[in-house]
Length: 558
Ligand code: ARG
Image (cartoon, rainbow, N blue to C red; front, top):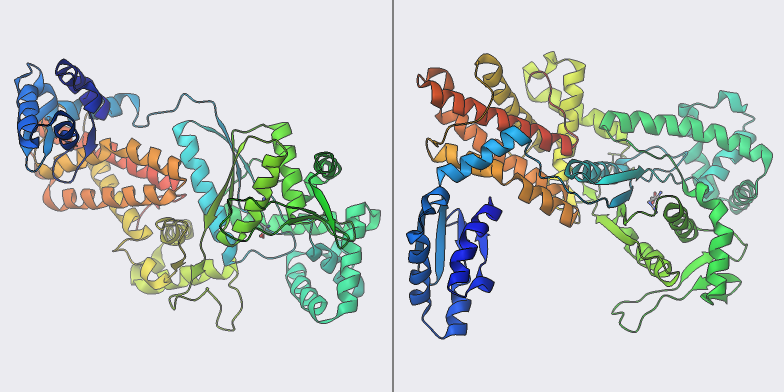
């Protein structure tokens, strides 16, 4: 719509030789506003009132003004308020109805997304929720716009935890064929605790891990099985959350690129040996904070986190050469990524590497979410607790099908999370976010189901709306629908699912006020009724699409 408005105003401004000054933005005082009056007044040495009134009357004198605006007026101290005409709004609404409501990109840019980042052998806990759902949501948002994406889970499968589990299995003489998820969930924490308190065990686990990395056949067998059992469980939880990946690669898959990486670093004279370890200095003169060197090889010759991340960049660029690589990872890894990105740049990579950072999930007390016994909450526990709390809220919740219940649990968890600007930490107050009122997932689902009910209980001719808009509630709803692409683009630009969460909440509120004020079944005017139902149909489609972007599905009833 804004494009149309600019196209109309442009010749008017140009005739006055003010073409460069045409700036239209949204406003809370009007549908749109021209706010360059001050600038013109300043440059041309005239009073804002004079130039503003002149511009407003030039616009009003145009023969086609009523196609675009219902009202154009200058207001002190220096703005021109624009109220769009019903005709213009409906032209665009009909465009949405006929051609779809998403303005697709024509770009072929490829976005590579690194999200999830679970670790083989360790159970998923609350800390794994945000990378999975923020990453999945950003991927869906990009896809809706028409961008190509590749999602990689980037398993943590190159660390000490593998050696610890192998050590535990061997120590207890457990045949590999008996390994299952319950056993894994017992052995890993036990061995990890043991290795922390017993240096001999720690060294043995380290030895096994490094033997494994060097290709020890027996350990490789163990590793294969551990990975299989663990990844199956990880997939079960991601399935529950509707999170999926194109690639199930891990840190260890970058191994073939490590020698090449080390060669590249050495040949560019970037490596310094420091107490036996190989490090790269990344400090720049302009740095305001401490930028410690990055270790790329430990004194025992082994690779670490930064090494595999760098080797993985080589791998991804060689295979896909994406324009962007987005790392959806905890903000506390900021320094790690800063270091990795700087080294990639030193190696000549020009792909855009971005750390999509997020804060932590806290309990209602504002402290990192813990179980009563002080442990980190497992993802399974989080899901079960949420389910229980929702069930205890209302008697009728207990009659829901388990499929519906799971969809609602998902909406509670995801909307609680994705409504926050990801960079901030937030308090997950399950009771509050399980309510069917307030800024919650269930509230939005409930609003959507009400509209679906109207659409299924009334018959109408699907198609274009007439030229009329019937009242302010109706107008605001239509304008909100036309705003969709602005929000979609903003969500992409800032990599922020919360922009969509905000939009869908506003839309749900407008739909509820429509519901409370307009009783469709009582309307006798056929055109009006049909227009309303087409607007609701479009609203429902937009709402459902937004929920899909937030990985939330509609239950059959609530
Ligand atoms: N596995 C890592 C962790 O648990 C997260 C991986 C994030 N992705 C990456 N390319 N470093 O902290």
